[in-house]
Image (cartoon, rainbow, N blue to C red; front, top):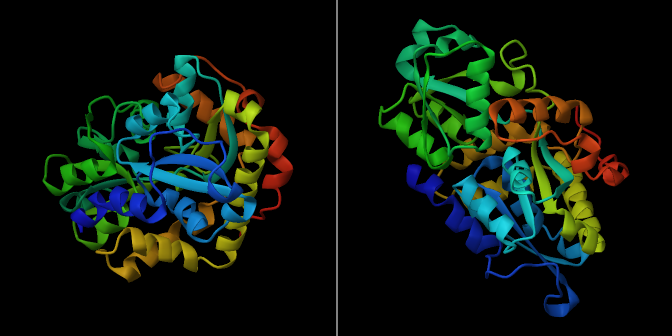
Length: 337
């Protein structure tokens, strides 16, 4: 199972297009416009691959390809280098601002914190589900420094007055999972499919879902967890391409909400060694949180979070960084009840 997860980047890269090292935004074969994207590794990003497989970008005249990284810092580096046009991620995109690289968030993918806190199984009888104080004194695995998971975990502990927990950085979600499975930590901050895998394999239990923990983590429900970011220069110089990208994302999410089968198929293709029923369970669990809408009431508290933890050095207002001229396009999507 771990080998399946660790191989996710390789499988998806082969299946959905790989990066040849050059930037996109130009003409591709057959008059299509090339656009290159990069994503970190998580089930949150499956709609990107499913949209490519389903031809949603091709219908817009885009030759879209995507590369996946287990290390979000590596994804950020590739984005800043200009080798890809679009970074699909969470707070990691905003750190480009620390390098004086203006960016624009043009469309969302996932709303509500996508992360969970999972503790080792033998602690389950000793703590109460949802009690953030259960983290006191524990050693907890997170991902690379400055990543969304790392920022969130450190802020969660700080905001709840927990000063004696030890945080251990690892390479991506798979690295955090390995730390828990090998007994090197008491728990981890993680996301699907690692949460379900830990539970169903008897490795751990879910202490809390950060999208539904208003007392411990009040920003969780409306947090814009994943957005599509482009450099401001790319946004200004390639508006037609960006228009097509946004339209393709919205069209795909509208259809996937009606029929999640393509998402399930994409996830099963990405993780062929994992139980297919389990993969379908995970996809349907996160389906209600997929949304192209970037809400201002979620963005402001997220900005406070990134400033508090040092992930972002200076405040940037919502309408400065979010391409609000796409609000009508996002509004074509109606969230499910």
